[in-house]
Amino acid sequence: MPDPRPHLGEPLALDLLNTRWIEQGPQDLLTEVTGLRTWLTSAGLSDRAAADEATLQATLAARTAIYDVVVHASHAGLNEVLDHGRIRRTLTEAGPADLADVAEPAWLPAWLAADNLLELLRTAPDRIRQCAHPECVLFFYDTSKNGTRRWHSMATCGNRTKAARHYARKA
Image (cartoon, rainbow, N blue to C red; front, side, top):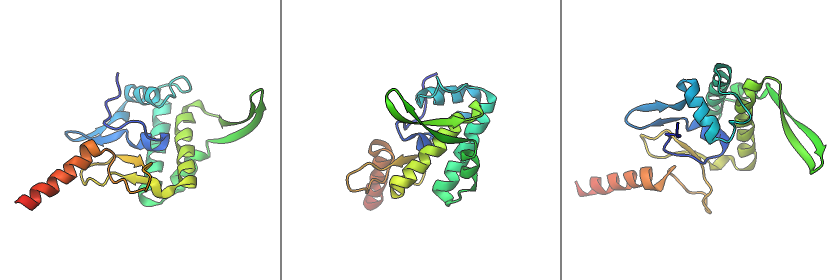
C-alpha cells in the first residue's frame, strides 16, 4: 500500500506524529497493522521491525508521548518509551558507533522515534512546529534559513490561508 499521507519526509519523531491528518475528515494511518507496515516502510524501518500488533501498540504509545511533549510539554510518557532501550557505544571496523539497544523488538520503532525527538529538542527545539493553518494537524521541522516557516506546505496550507485572507479582504 502506498503511503497516503499528505506530508512525508520529516524527522522520524514528527513523521510519526504525521500519521494522523485531516483530509475529508480525520485520518489515522495507525489504526491497524497494515498502516503500521506502510509507516515502517516509509520511515525506512521495515527491515528492522515486524509489522505486528505488539509493534503497533508500542508505536501508538510513542506517538502519544511525542505529541504530549511537543504540544503540552509533558515528558512522563516519553520517558516511559525511552525506558525500553538505550544507546550502546561500541567500536566497529568502521570506527566508533552508537547502536540502539532495545530488548523487546516491538519497541524499536517507538524508541527510535522518541530518541529522535530528544535529538530535535537538543539541537533546535524552537524549530519543531505545528502547521499554522487552523484546520491542519501536521507537524514539521523548520529548516528555513530564518526559522519563520509557518505551514507544513506552502502549496497547500500556505495557499489556503493566503487565499482566505484575500477573499476576506474582498468581502
